[in-house]
Length: 435
Ligand code: NAD
Picture (cartoon, rainbow, N blue to C red):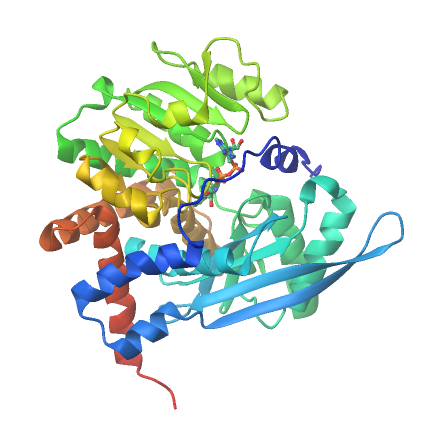
């Protein structure tokens, strides 16, 4: 399979400075955890256990560059929790990855798996590198050495990586191969999100966007909104945003705005998403210069007068500065951590129903779970079977979260945290502490 370099180009293209209104991502996670812990009257020892990552691996990755020089990169793998099963979580390659960011993402994986009901714990990985400046050969050597350094961490029954920002199915194939060479057998269940020919699952690529669509429909139903009467704005036109937008359009919604790192694109009559996908495919996966829409800024997109807003780009996009102007009735968080804790309160006050990331984007890990199950069974499912099971799990999780939020009179986010923490704490109580 030819290596696709475009995925790296777009992620770092004209990146605007992030707006931050909290100390760091891990603290943003803990702020939500605190509210749920109070509701659950969580024992202080359990509180400490569940907010402390189980293990943090930091590893030096020496790589011989194409020009013969050696460069040492820093690799991170955080295992947040393994109480419900082997840990699961993606690996991101980016110049600005931090341990705190990876810690937060690993914890979110624990809560996400618990909310959706897959038997995994949470983990996340990162390598501090600028993939845009690296050749395919350098990326392969980096990936293989990162994997070799973490051989005792990864494993189909231990810790199972997947793609995240700037990593893709090719990188999963290199991890699979490196791990398998050492295991002396092909261990395809060691990663998910791998190419179909190596045991990937049908529907995995579309799974996160599909899950976003399913929970958005559930929220519309609760609010008495009909998809055919709803307008939608989507921030981010990558895997989650573009597929989520297309699937919502198939349900009858009018997608009036989408954006990527080059800016926003608006058409009150509804955008031609297929034309935009085709345009991006021809244009380094970017929408810059797309003709059949009015250019708007990313901030304008977030505050448009629409029924549904789908932030599907990155963290910290809805903050206390722009939250007062957000008009959407439903905010479906395709991205991880797009809303800051300060913005949560403002959105609630203004009556927006936020479907939190640990529920809204759980479709990806759900089909990753299906992929892992298929690898272990050695029996592969049809796309239809994958989609039906995914839809069922997403709908059930939405209903559970909605009911928990109603029971405690809290936001869906806190409702989701309450469910997840209660589940993991119950398992911990039964397992007990090994001394
Ligand atoms: P991607 O790299 O495919 O797409 C990201 C998109 O966001 C690109 O279109 C990029 O141009 C755009 N973007 C980047 N910065 C932006 C900005 N400042 N304003 C507007 N657009 C911007 O990534 P993805 O896989 O779609 O992931 C997006 C988010 O969803 C991330 O937070 C990721 O962690 C989360 N997520 C992804 C999956 C998955 O299965 N892919 C699963 C769960 C969560």
